[in-house]
Length: 210
Picture (cartoon, one colour):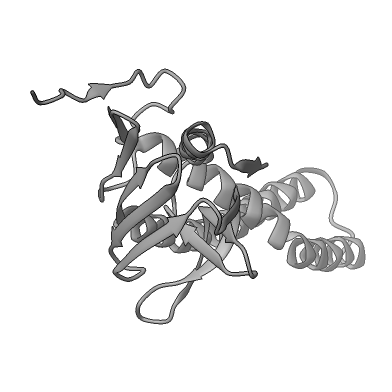
């Protein structure tokens, strides 16, 4: 008699997540399909790009302020002309930050889109982990025993795609005995990565490093 897999609840996954997990007896199957980043992920990238753009622009803006203050002082600008000069300088600073942030947003979004195009299926049993993955970061089939797997962690990492381009993305990292490391699920939300790591930990009893 066939066993119908039970699809578990996903209350602890972020909105828009397309990750699915099924139970087949002692086997846990996690499917992470390829696709486009959800709106929430794009908003997070935009916020990170804005912060990064503002931080990286401070040296140039400081230099611009020194030049502006020197110009105002040397030309004895006062009253209404000074107010107009301050307003234009503020617009100039805003435009610089916006330009840098926009460039960084484009780069980060491209990296995120590449990561989300990587499709992965993970099959977990108490003694073994089997991974099939394909996409911009290559095609691979892995079989890892419990004795080989030391720990699982999440966080940012510079990953190279099949074209040799480095992309800094959050990923799930498998630490193996002997020092080998395997990065999976690039570009996924950290909540999703923690969710997958916990599923591995529950099924195999392995350590999850924050």
